[in-house]
Image (cartoon, rainbow, N blue to C red):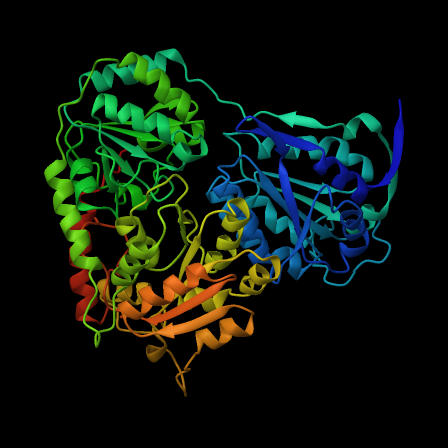
Length: 612
């Protein structure tokens, strides 16, 4: 057997660079690059290996470990899980900074490979700098925090362990059902140790992402259910996009007349003006989609995990005798809510179902409801007077009106995802990128960078509140450094406006959400435009919607990342559409407002379906 002597770090990098995937008929590297912030736990080992292999596996430097991991995850999401990136950090805070991002990837079923440095496997210098010691277990390190938020976890204690660990990692990263984050905690001494690896281990390998067909019996049962349905509804989730099933879904909806509602992950599965598209569903849904959901006797979820925002906390799909079907590549998700499970790839299932329903057409007409929603959209997105603080909806209306039809809007947390889910009108697949599985503040700008790396030819528009901006903004500098231009719209409502509204809605007193309601001696007057300019971006602050539209035109034409800041009203959200969300209200309180809210809450609880 021919062998080659390499350090474990060199072997890992060489193997990663040899993994290829088939994307739209072309064979490309599965790993598009490695994000790295070096420290004593990875600079000598992985740092040396990455430097030597940077033509085969490019290395990108970030400013924040969580931020770079968000960028990697956003890249994978925008690439529909067909490609992924690697993230490496040192031991200690560099590693634990990525745990939040690992949780985000786990919730959203997205592939990313984490290679954090770890303690010394030989333990000779223990305890080393930044080492977390467990008083009762000598095998524990800080990287064990990754275990519950990784789909696969391993600790590399010897160089030869890579021979089994790396193939296991790629099997998870490329598996449609098990897809998610992988963590290989890489002991820092082992990174530098050499081993005689088989040459064959580094041969180029092509991975083809499988399409799992459904059991024909499950398909027959679903077809029979739809043939007799009075008011069927499809709920399109992120699995539609990961399966590249948008065109198949559009053809199926056109042929059968079955309307489609979209989750956050599935938004953009159909063009906004497709005749079958009822828009967003659930807590942040349109009136048209939610009316259809309430009346539907057969609901078919495709590629959705049916979280509470989609189901209205299990109160939305409430028609008597209604049947719920879950089409999902993962059996874990297909069985949720007592659904009839159809386990298989979304596109394959849709195409097979179309054959079984050939000639059948549902007798439903939602045109009146859609027209009413479009009128509501026009009302809430219209510009206010020049002396009035705009709402989030009015700002988003201006962004949508000025954006190219091929643009991608990016967001993650606060009130903006809800407004975007209701109001953003997506023209093209991939034009809507909102991380709402984990709803992680700080994802927005770093995520926008990952989106831009995935699709450099599209305008990427990041919408972010002042709260999320303050949590993580350093990847503005990274976007400038890498020449990946973003347009960032900062909506400044001077605090956490979304949670302030939720606090009021549950009877609470204004407290600790808006800056004015938090403990302070001096209210900060933050100049977001000046801050963005200090990171290398172009930036300006505007006062009116008209000024915003003009500033956006300049930003789209600019040659580097541009930031536009506008003050907004923290009290206003779009009342049209939506449905109930279960947020528990205290059973006892000295506040009359809380007691009133609790009484209403108890009435609403009775609408929940708790048996499935």
